[in-house]
View 1 (cartoon, one colour):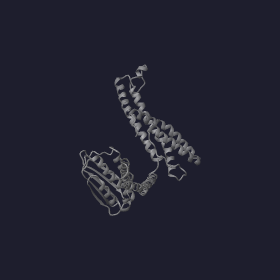
View 2: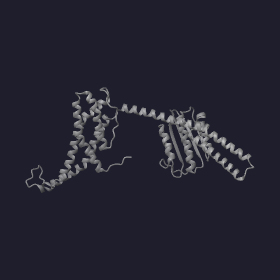
View 3: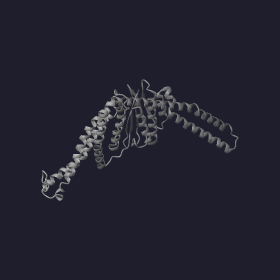
Length: 386
């Protein structure tokens, strides 16, 4: 998170950006004009010129202009945009530096208008007689106004320069669109891969460790029931080991269901949510209206939302009942979880709701929370089906 700079520091940095930008722009613009006669050298130099300008914006304005692919040919639009900025920036720099210098200089001259009569003998060769107190007062008022105006003017000229730079030195809208599309596809691939990995872990635990724990618990139960002639300490140890094995098996089953329940793949969201509602320690009214199954990723997100929400209700809400509604309307899946608990839930109050929001954001969904103190609490989630 960026810390906002104080007013004085921001005014100083804006002014420095504008004033230093003038010689930099004139130098780079002049070199660009000269190198037009040597196109290969210009092609290699333009990215370096652009890098200098980007570093100036980042150093003084703390503004990062996204990089573009280095120009490789005269046909590249990025080449012409960058050349255009280096040719245009001297004009922007001259206008900005002139206005900012006049504003700061006028402020200094106006506020120090009372000094000339102390350092120069009369007559004073000015259009206005600075030996007149009223004239000095007018000068100082103008200087004070310019002092207030100069930082605003410096900020405006720096913002204008930044706007031009982002337009010409940054990626175009089509390039940004391509990047967004690529990132969206890669994110979808990562989410699908993570979901597939969770399903694989669920299968491995279900077919491996869980089955071994079931066998261990059965053998310990059999030993507990048949070996009654053992000493009391031995029988107690077997009984304790049997109870521990059953508890470990229960925790492993809960963990496996939390990863990705097998019933979600086999029978769909309705059956999976029915199991979650049945295990809740309070009555849950469940309504699922899905004519066509959604993608496995969206099913997993919806299952996680309901499961985590009911877990949070059991831990924190002191609710007597809850309602869950899942319905599909065209290409959107709507999930609603309601409880009559004490309310007061907040998105920044713990990791549970933050985890829900992160899951929803990962598939471009929307989450709305209503939880006034005293209740009730309603979680509404809207997910894209494709």
